[in-house]
Length: 271
Image (cartoon, rainbow, N blue to C red):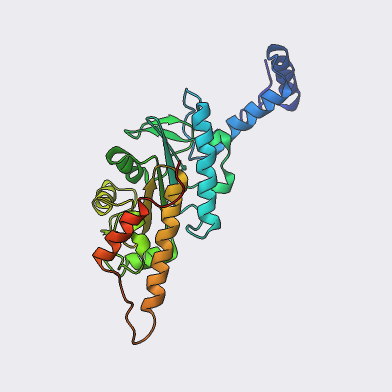
């Protein structure tokens, strides 16, 4: 029997004996055992981790996860979020991959895949999903979106505190479906916020969240991200123009915006 210390751990000699016995029983080698030990230690010391879930990510999910992590890191690099304040998701079949709660994006790797089904039940990974999961799931349940990006972009958040709708300062509002609305404030992570967001998103691919930030969605992560960047830029333009003393920005009319919307349908390369 191994000799136990007062804190329940084996003495050095007994631990060596136990390791030698483990080597004889485990033919997979030292490297495998070291990796297994590190993974177990990480799960035990990280309070955000849950018990490991059974199934592994498919090849498609693993590829989508890599794109998701790259997009999340881009939101930080481009100044759209600070720390872990935003979140990103992508839908693969009936599984929604999401950034985990409170984990810096530069620390996420291939083994950190975090996924839920459309009811919110976790089906992949050991990290707790983002607290804004209700918003992401609400988008996927009510639209054909395959990706969602949520940020706390500075100019967009500032605008969300000033108006109920972003004034038509630029024709690229048509790329988001029309004038960008501001969803009424509700506590982050709440069903109420998700419901307010859906009302603001009706007929749109992006909206502002009052005193909070932005939400955009698209058929791909790139499209969702581009809409986020475009929305932040429009907010910055309006704030800049509005700050000029004694002058009021000229705005577009709904008819002018509708004309742009028609043109955008045929914009870009075909085939």
